[in-house]
Image (cartoon, rainbow, N blue to C red; front, side, top):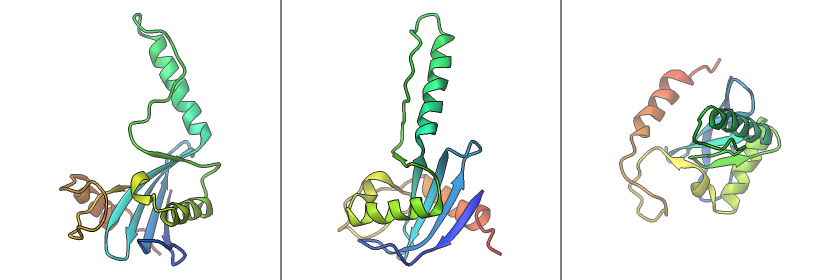
Length: 145
């Protein structure tokens, strides 16, 4: 499920032009793409406690199958996850707004486009996901009616 949101409520360093939300099939995690007014695209992952519990169960089941491991319930997250009480447009929108207001947006979202503004504080460089994000935004998420 993809939701497209035009939003003028966001504040802070960036002004959000558009955000796209895509729930996973279990409904307990959500990929979010955010495009700011200057054309910068960021990606982030929102998840619920149920998602973390499911990841722990998967790890337990996997470690149970190996003879040289002790089964353990744990969640190993390789990318930043923003844990929320539930996934709704309002919760995600308010969380993004709060991250921007607290000036921590860039530490929880990953920039997928380059920029020439040297004043921003993030790990820049040529990101392979820039082309992927452009394709997703232009070809996949264009479901507007």
